[in-house]
Length: 429
DNA sequence: TCTGGGGTCCTAGGACCC
DNA sequence: TCTGGGGTCCTAGGACCC
Image (cartoon, rainbow, N blue to C red):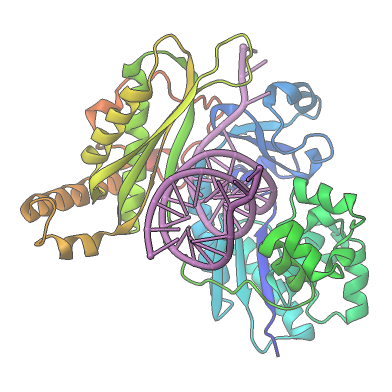
């Protein structure tokens, strides 16, 4: 017997995080903006019919105003922290879990079924609300893809109390639900594939479930075929308890204003390289390839467009911030052209190897082992200080001090969970 | 004026080899 | 005019997700 797979997903996660610390927002429409306050990345249910996800702020400012929406810049320090608390809570309820994204977690519940399964899901929901203040929904089924559909339904249908169990549905009941599910709502079917499917007369999840394997594989690749099998109740996507190490790490952000000079681009690049290097060390990796890219805006047509990338191979894999920064700046100097207004620069590292393996190989060739030990110790100190005193408490001077190019964050929330000075005050009347 | 960031996986096509 | 077959590796680009 296949064990039930449950997907826990927070409702309007980013918006909900702001509500946790500002209870006055409860029942009020809230939106959260992307970096640079550019687009709407999250909005509460009240606004969903009027504002699509990803709409640029300037295009929906009026509608937001008429609905008296509360607007926030994205505050990832807050979301990351609440996410960790939420995952700790739900993990208690299952022998195995996979944190799939910042607000989603798959759980397996072997031995559970029927009413017992429903009650367990309700208990998870109650604990999440009690311990983190976040509203969540849960969907149970035999595969991840079906659990996703169950979860969506649980969210949309207010009669369901946030929990839907498809695990105990009969084949006929399940087919009926799939027939009422548009094909674009299936996990793994986006706009392009949705369009292709519709052109071929496949409009619902039920129709896709019954499409011939050969046709699916040819048109939607092996991933599409897996999706179809999962719709049929055949698990193809295993639970991954330990997240696999990343194969590439990237940092790239738009500036708060266009910049022209190599010096300022360099400051931003150092900042992003430092972030990438920190993430590398966190997962115990060193990079052997580094890519730098920069671009002018592509929405404004009255300005010349320029976009370029360069790939550099490191003499030795490294996670030492100054080494990576040196390569990055070397690359930037080669692709930089005067006379353009740039809006973004970025860095991507790949060819990742385990840092330990590097150290073991040292006595054969490569950098002086003594130097490497010094580099490692130095970075451990820096990472420790930054963990303790806040990100970028210690940083390279070339990352800049003024940083007038920094992204726009006009509506930033206080750091409720990471700064003593920002703790909310409770007063007794 | 103002249009996000960070990932994964797959496929096609070219270079190269025997 | 005719011009093999099969394999690997790499890269660029597309599609998707949150």
